[in-house]
Amino acid sequence: MDFKDLVIFITGASDGIGKQLAIDLAARGAIVVGCGRSRERLIETLKEARKATPKSLMIACDIGDAEQVHGMMKKVLADFGRIDILINNAGIGMRRPFVDTTVETTEAIMRTNYLGAVYCTHEVLPAMIARGSGHIVNISSGAGKIGTLNMAAYCASKFAIIGWSESLYHELKPLGVNVSVVCPGPVNTQFSREFQDSEPKSPPALFVSAAEVSRQVIRAIERNKFEVVVPRWLALMCTLKRFAPGLFRALALRRFRTYVKIPARDAISPEFPGN
Ligand SMILES: NC(=O)c1ccc[n+]([C@@H]2O[C@H](COP(=O)([O-])OP(=O)(O)OC[C@H]3O[C@@H](n4cnc5c(N)ncnc54)[C@H](OP(=O)(O)O)[C@@H]3O)[C@@H](O)[C@H]2O)c1
Image (cartoon, rainbow, N blue to C red; front, side):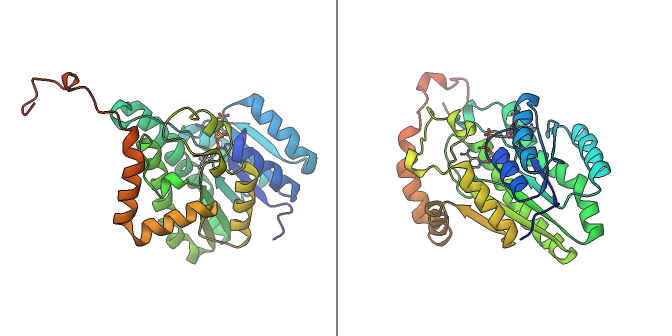
């Protein structure tokens, strides 16, 4: 596929997978426009992308804020005339039992990981539909296919991305707009380094690089694949879950239950009827 002069918008381009995608797609001739909250890190991405595509641009924006997204996309559409491919990549995570996760944390995760993608897509979709072409790529996760303990808010946001993508696929395919969803397992980025001491830990051998995920995202666009699970071991686990859900859940429970902390009896309110 020829990416030359396609305008590709990437959220979360200041680090990790998004940064790698910006560099790789610029190297293929695309005009890369990206966003993130950290100006300093965006400048680093921009320096790299501009080596290949001088027209590339980075914009500081919090995608969890619909108004900021509106202003940013208005500027991009005015400056470049169109967005050919939107990659909804920005995301934040957490590792904590649900009982210890505040509602505010769940809201913040949903706002960035799910609503951020919704806000960005709302802004670019009408023009894609009017042109009868475009591609929306959503980065979900293995945690969007398999519920994992201590990640309830994150899993919910990534399951949401998959269900939303599936709906969009059916709505948009007949209108000429393609939809893909990519579900990576553990990736060697700052994101996973932040949780490296929290359970459940993934063995280092199971990690893939941001470069590999970027390669798979680009392949999904080129081959117009709806869903890509990467790496292969994770795809195999998803297949096992799909065809033997009971067995899969029992095996997962055996692995996960060792990490569950049983609250002390006196931590439960004695006033509650039944205690
Ligand atoms: N790493 C993994 O193990 C893994 C596995 C499966 C799926 N994923 C998913 O892959 C995506 C990229 O993750 P990564 O590993 O590359 O993480 P990362 O290295 O932490 O990068 C995350 C990117 O998202 C941006 N971001 C976060 N919140 C934002 C907000 N409110 N507005 C705008 N940008 C925001 C960050 O930029 P600023 O901080 O500058 O805002 C950064 O550029 C995420 O959706 C993540 O859930 C990651």
